[in-house]
Image 1 (cartoon, one colour):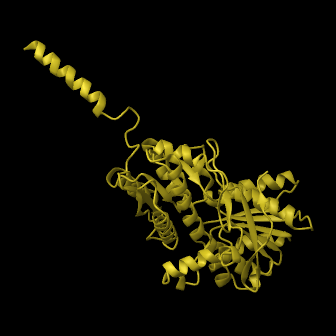
Image 2: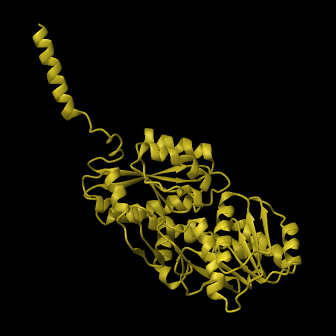
Length: 399
């Protein structure tokens, strides 16, 4: 009897060697079946930033459609599930948990709000779930380096640095009298740090560094102080709506100097709120090689007009963020193809790190490596002519 029990236990142990998954592979193939791969989108479909969530959703789904129409990923079709983060840390963490543990997504795409990224990062690292960021530009989301997070547009610190380089490389006047107005939060603060560090290389110390809170509507106190210092250039590092209001109020106060803005400088809300006159000396960075309705992005515009006619009726659509979300999902598809039929998260991450000069018309090339997950370290700038953004044909790059 004892011999039979021992034999049975031995057989069970032997079987378990073949049945149990290898150590460390739990979740490696979550979301992957013989026929499908489930991708999760992250963005605010409701709440104060709900205009940005659809950019993630529509861009991700259209890229998935095109990948599937081209044959899918080694015989599998992609499926896309959108999660509403509400642009809130707790809500974002809750939806990410649901999508990882209940829906079993293979990987994430999107992300809009920096603080949401910082809230979910520990979860993604613990559960080994990769994310390719397509909108959120906050510097700290990828600091320190994470194996699981990638980004396809410049972070705030890089944009701040490039704003300083643009000042020196574009203007023949070699301006030295500058002031800075930025939002207090990490989005603006990290950009300010990058800008100040670059200005120091040129021997430039700002006359003033003023701050404001997200959603403020009256910037007169800060602008009057800056005006009294008679700057040649005002740097503005704020969210798009705030930036537009600052430009309008600066113009109304007679602050007639060059103004260099922040991300989203091609968004239609800027001329709509600031007015044409306020934009005559305004320049700002964009993560594209052409204006959103420029020649190189004409196929993208036509594609969106055909696929999303109601969305395109809004004069604010599309924007550079629509492009970055679509491109990010195409890049994810390329990495999954490189990972092979035996797809795992580890192989997918390795494939992402092999991406070099991934190109889409009108978008800067994207390059990753095992030690660099910031895929784009360059920008172009726009200037406004009669209220319309025109791209300056000059690549401003990190050294």
